Image (spheres, rainbow, N blue to C red):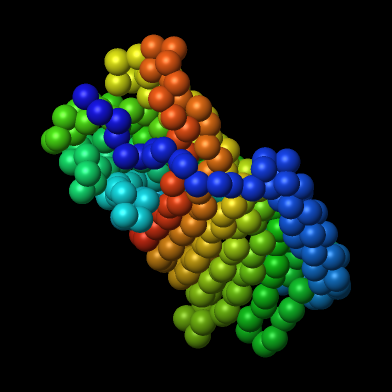
Amino acid sequence: MQLNERSTVCKQYSMPAKWRASLKSIRVVRLATGATLLYLFTIQSVHADSDYSERINEIGLTLGTYSYREPGLMSLQGVKAGVNLRSTIANPERSTFIISEVRFAGGTVDYQSNGTGRISGEPDWYVEGRLLLGNKWSRRGLSNLSSYVGLGYRYLMNDGRGLSSTGHFGYRRESNYLYFPIGFIHRGKLNTGAKLVSSIEYDYLIRGTQNSRFSDGGVGHSDFTNSQSEGYGWKLHMQYVTEKWSVGPYLHYWEISDSDAVAVYRNGTYIGHFHEPHNNTVELGIELRQTFE
């Protein structure tokens, strides 16, 4: 059995870890400072309205396609169903709000690689939690605009254990993203009395880690963990909203650069340095939400 291509030997020169960490810290501080100033600048008094009840709880069901690609190496394609829990606590007088949400999505995916064959029906799921702080800062006629910042975390498990069509072994892969979301929400009232709510969000990757369970191959390879310092994401949502329910499409996207390289061993013997390749993830689906007490 041979190694799968989900992680590859890295032979290229890379910037020293200390330099990368310093540059990363500077970018994080600049982004956090800018987002904080944006939020403080946009806090202002506006008239309270029915868009901001003191508390709104929602449960959502999602269904969509899922695609993960390491360009030139491999891909995972499948369908995922999910459940979202979302709670909004608002202060209508100050036009501020806090959103907490948890999302679970899972299904099976098919592995495809020109070099290491195919594996069908791999279990693949993730859970994502977010805390957002926002402010409604612009109102024009029947519409208003809000902005928010926050902190998000996503944990993903892909279980690729087994042999591919070409005899290569698969393994479990755990992905962790800690990220900083910055977003805008637009709410517009329709003639029917319903609302059209759309949002756009940029997600700045603070830190990512990939845990590769190479020992799953059963031939003496060591497990290893890679760190990811460069990446970003986008979240686009649109909802047709009534008093009790809402429905609409969503698009989630991640673009992550090459990770660092770490030593890997087989039965105690060094076999090379491995890294998590540059990759992107696309989810496209539809969500149905229901409010509840």
